[in-house]
Length: 470
Image (cartoon, rainbow, N blue to C red):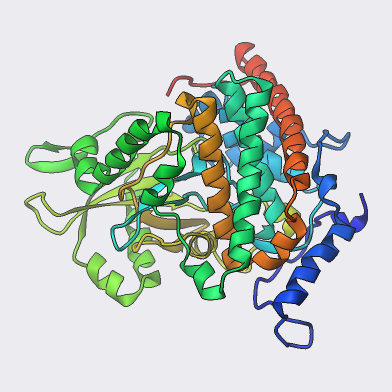
């Protein structure tokens, strides 16, 4: 591997117009040539395979560094969720993979990356126009960086999901190849479109349902219907109750609970007051019509367990028929920053929000950010027609189709801030790149299984304390 192939720490790449150094816009032919030229620097086959170098940092040291800023009482829950399977370990170990990816080849054709583009970080949600879309839904690690890292993160998650489901090696490889082939083919489609067409592109749920196997249609239709019902009123019924004439969030420790520290609740109120200043004036006016009536800590995800995350129950009508749930989520330094440089934004909340708006076809209208003392936050609606596929119940054919939809969706997201023409020209029409990434995914899945086994042993021997099954 040459020095040109390695991403090194420093200022993150600046995303902007596709221009020559003199300031003139590049032609489409020049952008295609740029992509082809990058093959000479980073051969497509060079992405194949992965092995742990002798200098690889202990993955548990990486994870323990993250735990230092988290609620100590929730760290055992984080370990408990990660140990459930190699796939769940992988979901919580984005920081480990970022360090591992830092020594892998890169074309230098940067985009706004998700940073954690595994299978479970795609899903359904409502656009402000109330259309149900399929898109990326987690942006805690987003930064400008190598598009290849997102593709590898997605593809390795497909391999691990297939193994978790008990699929054969051939079935796992087929699903992994489909995720990459779909990315490549849709990047080619986007390369032929205008800039505005690329920006307007979206993955509508009604468009992707016909792409799924017949065996998945009934279950997928139910998922879509559940997502449509997964709104604030449904959350009100599930997460709250009336106590002494006052509606409150129901405790379900350690997942949802009120904390005894009054100072903490004052801090969350302050965060919500400050965050309003980052909203557009019309959205701020709307939010001012709601008042906060209760706040509780709420655990989310796998990788985010233990970070400072809250939910706020708000109402615009004391008769309980006009609620709003907001999620206040801590934003820490992206796991990519040690390897591609620090964010240009003054707060990580703004970094997350800007990255989400760049990558998603449509974003929550209440999306905003703020800072309180040393912690950074972003805020959004807790539930707004959100839904996630149950990967663990998928058959080989369904996982392959779903992986293809995720690959297509990732290509659309990358094309907004990167150069789809150059990336597509680099990828080409053949499957050289696809096979290389499938090879990488097998090796990295093997490494993840080894890391997971170490965690399992540490928990079994009492070295690490874990709360399992929650």
